[in-house]
Image 1 (spheres, helix red, strand yellow):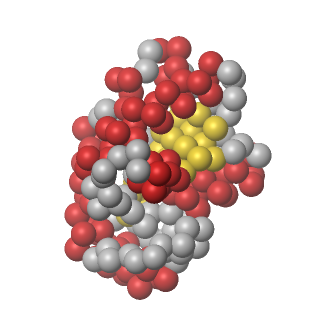
Image 2: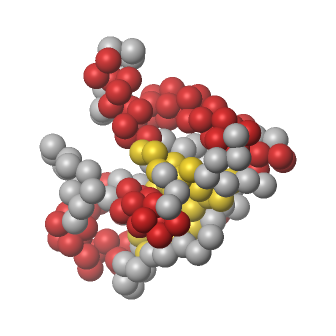
Length: 169
């Protein structure tokens, strides 16, 4: 089984992946590691600020990692914001039955009421050199992700009142 965890920046994708790894003993892979490896190695001229252009570039590799894990009957958690919302079209039925997808989405009211804490916990797992995320950007990105989850009929974990996320496998 492959578990895909997506969502906007600062939604806790990496924290959830770490939590699932510890609970179920399933390794996780952060797409950010692939991104930084490609950028630092000079394999691409894209930069950390080129998120839109990075999605197809990174997804081309990640979807093949997913297929390989499934073919080898290996469990894997993959997390990152570089999973396109039309991800299902890249897999046949035999793969889709082995993939569970979750998109973490914070409501506008949650962001409004907890923005200071969101920033406070941004380095829980990853060490961000600079954040630069604004409340308005975070709200817009989460609204967009919620709309896309609905459009593509994807599993969305809505973070509204309290930040308590757990996934039972």
